[in-house]
Length: 295
Image (cartoon, rainbow, N blue to C red; front, top):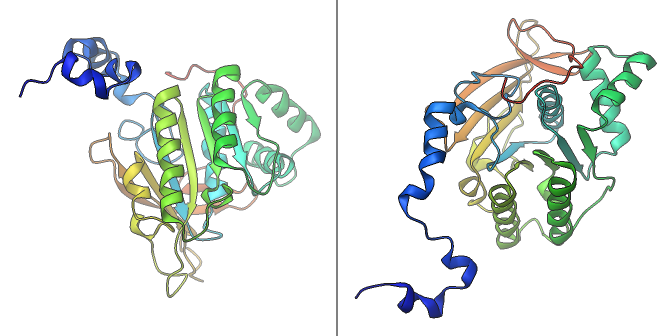
């Protein structure tokens, strides 16, 4: 049987038929990958080797951990770093108001428990065209969420979007695994369609003890969630009273498009700024300069 345009026509819409392309249609993209360095572009995260892992446009990441693991703190650090690198960000946090988020970002950016008013006003002026918030708490339905994401990318050139969290997307019950899978599939597809990076915060299932370490199979909900996204980052806390013991850990558990990027790192909390740091790392105040994303 020979499959050609005529035999496939009854089964393909006009849009779908345009998706079948010859190999030479992708030559420039592959040249850019090897010669321009597209394989090491994207948002550098606070920890790890930026030559081995970044958050690239067109990809989707799940950030998972149990309650109080430090997910929101870490997400804030990632957004600050993204802005500093020249990326425009949108926070869709249905669990924290913009006021609470910004107050914590002031603290993380200034390294001070009590940032000065001058610093805060300077921060807001610096970030005014780089950081945006969806001003709603509670829940949002999937259709509205996707409309908000597409509008932000189209109208404000947003490249990094934080969705906190999966459980706040309305109409999806804890045991509705089919619904959860549909949400993650739509979000992952949107990343590719509109060329942005979406980080989706998810919760881990409760284990026998809060001291138990999780893996990507611990993500609450459908088992396919981790399979559908490009990257999985896990977080957890240590509950050790020893003076020099680390406070938390972060793991790149899955990195589909990166070679050997999976790793785990211990973290310490810098109490004044609420920044998480690797051993020996010093907190760094945000530089309020406009930088190029590819520098």
